[in-house]
View 1 (cartoon, rainbow, N blue to C red):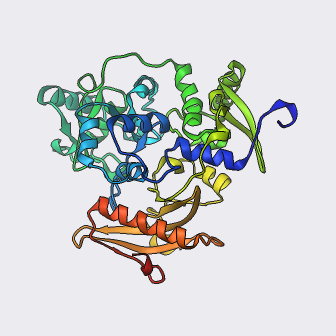
View 2: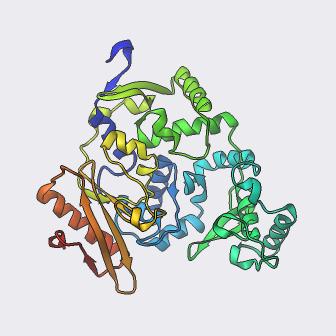
View 3: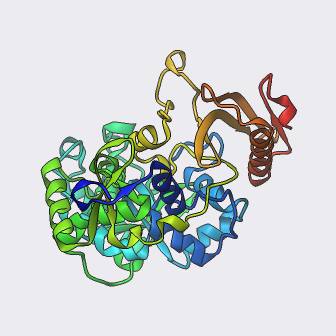
Length: 395
């Protein structure tokens, strides 16, 4: 115990707990079942969606990192047909567990179209009414089903005004995503997609920023949690108020971490059993939008690994590559590779592969990395893996 009776934890304990809560302490070690998917969503808070498909969709890759190869169509059926989860905003656009639906309903009520970039880009009421009328009468539709006779654009991403209306109605809870067609959203009336139920209170919604963040990460500072969930997006003063009331109620405990400054926090029940966590093992590859990396400052503080998504960086200014997958080995982020799946040729191309300065994992690392690449290639349906010079012995 440190001075003042605050529990003191070793940094290694914090890392082990973090990887365990994220489902990454064992590489691709479990079969993906409906129950396992729900458990992951409930623990992490969501599964981020992203349109970039240079290797595979972000949510598919994130699940692969935990479960290994699985059938994508089965997962899609669970989500969009069986409705064991739904799409909304958690950390940006996510697949979310049904237990978060009351929180999403609070977001819908709190959504202010006058804020942020919506203020200048929202579709007018007439367009929204026309969109709703068509979906009510015709059933689920996607943006391409609206011809946009006005030709008006929606601003950012060059969205047409009807697409802006669809997104506005989605965030307000009037529409829901009922399906995906070639990754394009299909919208339907919310009451035909979501099960009935209440909205969370404003206080429950605010508390979810802290409680869900700690459930997913184990032990964290306020700064580590500030960007983990973007819904709700709280001010610094609001975050401090949430922390204070949950500390007072005993739901959250303050702890100290050896060698790291500042106040750290954990759910009271999380501190039980910390000493029994197994040592992380194996070698894995992480999607750039993996929930482990939602708060990149945390990776810097705990794993000494600086990571930035360089998709939108001009090519001459990229340091590591376009779609870089961090390499997780024995509980540490030890390197990164920049892959591309050449679907026409059926080849997984690794354009660059680097390890962190000073890291030498030896044969265990090379063997683990070879296994991870072979596993990823099998999941993608790639017959070959092309590696850069100096690494070709892996394959």
